[in-house]
Image: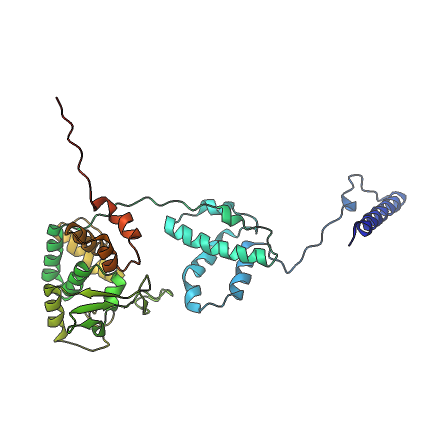
Length: 334
């Protein structure tokens, strides 16, 4: 439509309104506040009016599995349903009571949803892009010292000997809990004296209790760990009972896969309490291996490899305060 056609349309509308006003005056129905003569823009009933409506349209357009939808997507939709914000209302975000990491995860998904909404013409702009997630408090890593490690191992030996090899393995290798849980005998090569960490067994994202799903390691890489004498002897002793090439190395007391939450609540916490060791998560065994390696002179690149990191960034960020720590200069008092 050119400018002249646009002008004609405007004049035509004005004339139509003026004619209607004249008719209403004559009929005694004139609206003195002129509300009846305002133009009401037409709305598209197919366009979403709330974030929930946009969310459902977006999710329906995705090619993702039910397993994926059952994780953060399910919880995010539940949040949206509860608040039921209008499409352009972002004030509800200020009422989120979430941990920083969870906040970032949920915000990221909603941003993706609204970015899609912009491409489809449902939104002019993605208001969620301007929201800055809160920064989490930097938690100081507190690895177990040598005395605490011995106390923990002694506690498992006395109270829950079935789990002693599992706990020692995590201290000795620094593997992620899901990697230790998922370790199979085919990944233990006694001929080459190495353990191959190629995958993990994290909890099923659907949240089905003890169900776990085998997948690649967190960083997607494979690493080879040379066994110490103690670790080799421990695994050789375990191999004499219940060895299956594709079977799990570490199992729950009644067989089957170890559940990390169950292990922590029923075994880990009681042992630390009984041994007088201040509580830290089982994951701290990983920090303990890394800090011990650094103290024993292992290069940063070597520690990063043992932990399964692709570079030294995370090692420097987490353990940098332990590396080449300088001494204060001598300042004479007098």
